Image 1 (tube, one colour):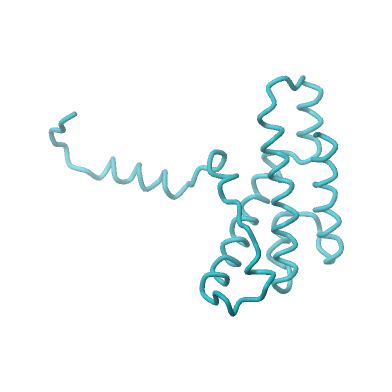
Image 2 (cartoon, one colour; image 1 turned 180 degrees about the horizontal axis):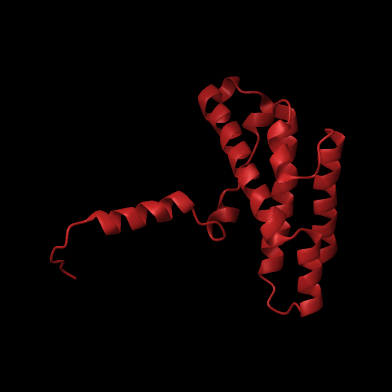
Length: 144
């Protein structure tokens, strides 16, 4: 499974190089055209799917965990690539919803997997709104 993950990350890097981009999350925004964005979404979706499967293994030793981290460091790249994926996927999904049947076939056939990120990514704005709401309320009695 680790080898499959390594191959998927390598494929993502090759994809970025084919589009004359450095393999950095910020470079995703420089992709030209819907076809390139669709290809990125598909490539990264595979990386994320395999990473999610690897996270479910409880019997990984430290060496295997270090190998997984070395392939694509969690903090440095994976989380930033996730945000690039989510933004690109939302953009394509809006096109899919707005144009409906008139949207290009590639966009119509895209299957967006936002669920993969639901347990791992916490929305900063949501947390800040909760804090603001709780600190701005006037003291009052509450019932349980």
